[in-house]
Length: 142
Image 1 (cartoon, helix red, strand yellow):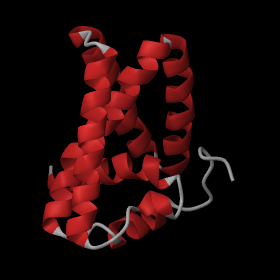
Image 2: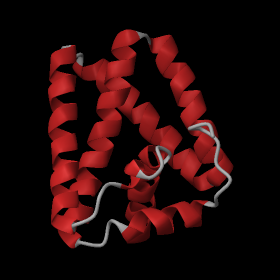
Image 3: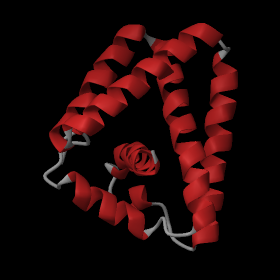
Image 4: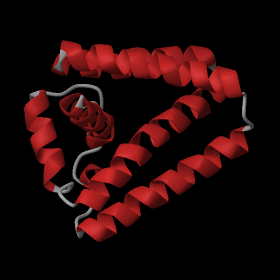
């Protein structure tokens, strides 16, 4: 199955993801680290090629659109903000790599606290569901 094609509903994905994200500390770590990881991936791809970033964004947004229009819109705005931030700060690629590594360490610490392995060990599509889960949780709070 392709990473960008899903036959599950958004709610099904979110419910499965939530199983290994019950602990308050782990949730808090994810709310911080998932967007940071997403931002660093945008930055790293932009460092390779802005055209590659545009292609990647279209693929990722297609995945989100098939799940939910509101999620698609939220993630389109987030991707645009990430691209804008990357262009604004113009940090060296080494800084982005360091932030990426630290954020992933945070994720694994959260899962150690939770006592559950990261969802993407079961299905790589959870790497795209993590940002959706954060976005949907933030929408619930707003």
